[in-house]
Image 1: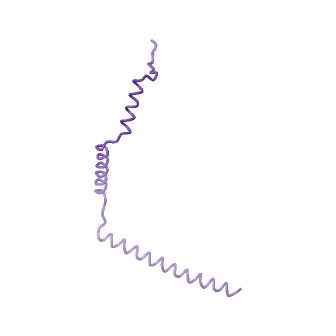
Image 2: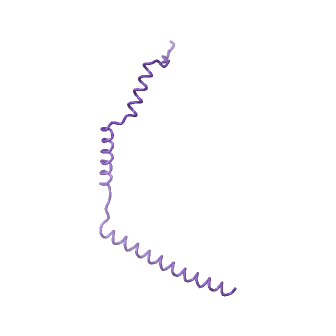
Image 3: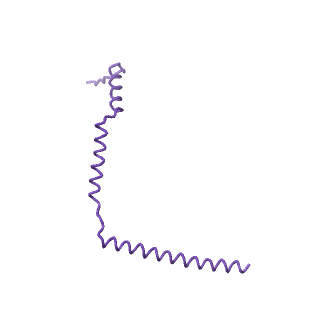
Length: 95
């Protein structure tokens, strides 16, 4: 048996259906917008519940580590500045 395919030639009915679908897709309803906003905030609430808040001990340890590393970096930069200053002064005094 042979199979036959029905091909539409772009009749007025099919063009009207296509234009009606385009209108429905491009038209935003207030209900759809409110639903999307509601879904967004429900997702935010769900993600907010997954946050693991640090304890006071964790905050104290991390703050101490940041301060110590900052002081060490500051001291290193100061030492390098002094060394480079003496080096440049020595080189300029030679010439």
